[in-house]
Amino acid sequence: MNKIQGLTRGAIAMVLLIGLTACSGMSQQGKNTAVGAGIGAVGGSVLTGGSAAGAIGGAVVGGVIGHEIKK
Image (cartoon, rainbow, N blue to C red):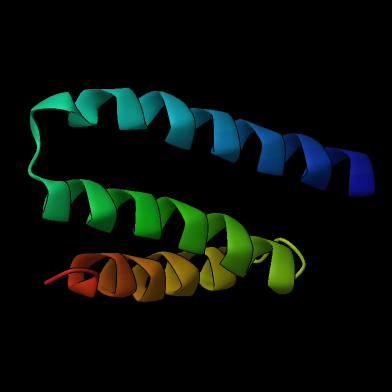
């Protein structure tokens, strides 16, 4: 089961990184929000052992923090 969770985490990280390339036309605050949400999702998933709720919660918290940076 650990191998599947590792592959899932890697796939999520890849999708997030590829998704960030779509941020070229965004404002700096929008970019910070997107990056914060991505990092928060990965961090939340890792901290909760791969739980979807942890990933969602981490994305929300990371997005809010990213949005507030340099406001």
